[in-house]
Length: 155
Image (cartoon, rainbow, N blue to C red; front, top):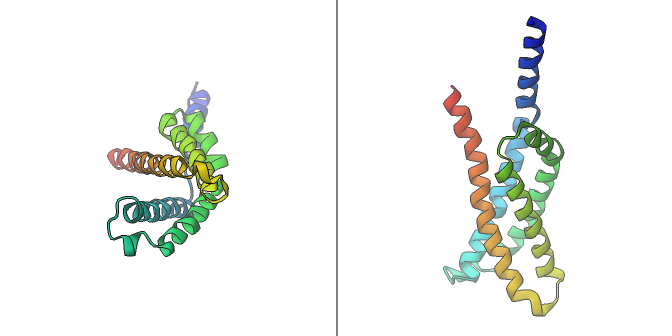
């Protein structure tokens, strides 16, 4: 009985720790995703909503968004295999995690289409990309903050 109890609690501890990223990796993923979201939001404000267009809507901000998107993709790739499997097995935050994954797929495809896609699909692709990006940013913050709030309430 004691051996079974220990094995069960040890297994639960292992599952909680399995999906937890090392500090450097968590920082890398959060920084990459936030940098990509902030530069994309800045360009959206300048280009689509004409807010400080000369500053926010210029090519340098767009190039920064493209570079941070590459950084975010690398960061996500570093965490995805273990974090996704552990999150699925733990049955925690599946909805927000898989929703983020779906939105990221849409963002990667539409980002590629903006550069390589046909000109006649450019406008609907732009709208789909920025709408998806805004929703993704909100879900990413929720997914990240729920963990912090959950851990803080345990203390």
